[in-house]
Amino acid sequence: MSDRVIRAGVRQAVPADLAEVEVLAGEHAAYERAAPPAEGLAALLAAELFERAEPRLGCLVAELPGGGLAGYATCTTEFSTWEGRPYLHLDCLYLREEHRGLGLGAELMAAVLAEARARGLRQVQWNTPVWNEGAIRFYDRLGATRKEKQRYSLAVEPS
Picture 1 (cartoon, rainbow, N blue to C red):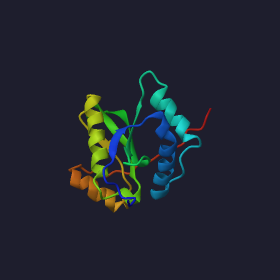
Picture 2 (cartoon, helix red, strand yellow):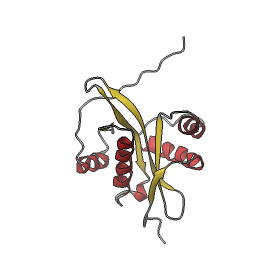
Picture 3 (tube, helix red, strand yellow):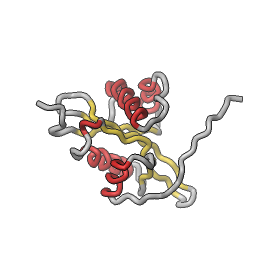
Picture 4 (cartoon, one colour):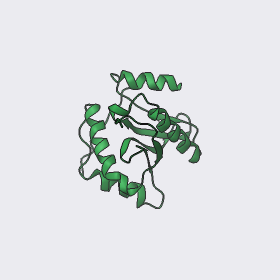
């Protein structure tokens, strides 16, 4: 059997997934030419996903038929001042290269949309690097609307 997906399942992450999600997040950061994830990311994710009375973070995984993960998506609820309502922010969506083009991205996005509906939200927003033409084509095929902006971050030094 090849390493190509025959049929994967998209589901909510469980604690046992987080070590592999940490590896996927590292691959994702490298793919996006970004700094590596935080040290001990699996434990940080566990605290947000499973140790809060009301978790802020959602994590979906695409599980391979024989076990292991092909990719993941994470999201949080945010608020749009201009629209006057909350929305689901898709922070990460990543599939390993060998599992792209097989419909798993669409399955992960469908699960993200279901998560938004379950939270009573009417919109999902996200960012992607301007050079990531494959992702841009994928999001365009989904019917997503582009908003041309630059994303910034600024470290806050402790006082």
